Image 1 (cartoon, rainbow, N blue to C red):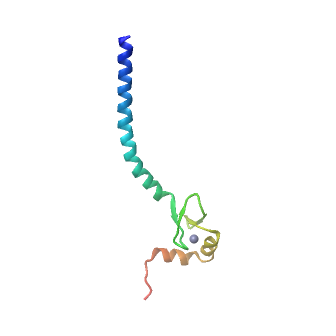
Image 2 (cartoon, rainbow, N blue to C red; image 1 turned 90 degrees about the vertical axis):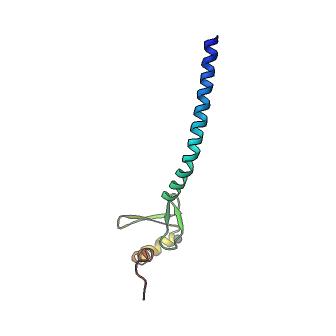
Image 3 (cartoon, rainbow, N blue to C red; image 1 turned 90 degrees about the horizontal axis):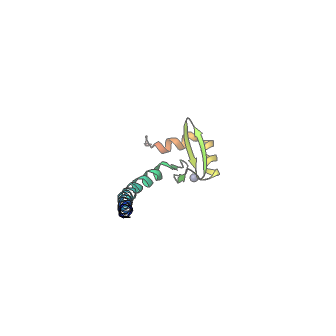
Length: 96
Ligand SMILES: [Zn+2]
């Protein structure tokens, strides 16, 4: 009887350690993780500069890069003149 009681006590103690230890760790890690995932799953529509989530909009491969568009009309605009939108996004050269 006493052995069983101390075993239960030990189990409860272990459970608390796991709960508090893991809980604190998970809460800490979750904040960073969700932030990182946020960045990873969002694309910038090069036509209208809107953020497009990976699950939404339209995707197109162009020169080995995946671009995503908020709507079909943005995709069509990009299709018509991809260089125009890509050069705009780089913003390397200001027109004098
Ligand atoms: Zn768009």
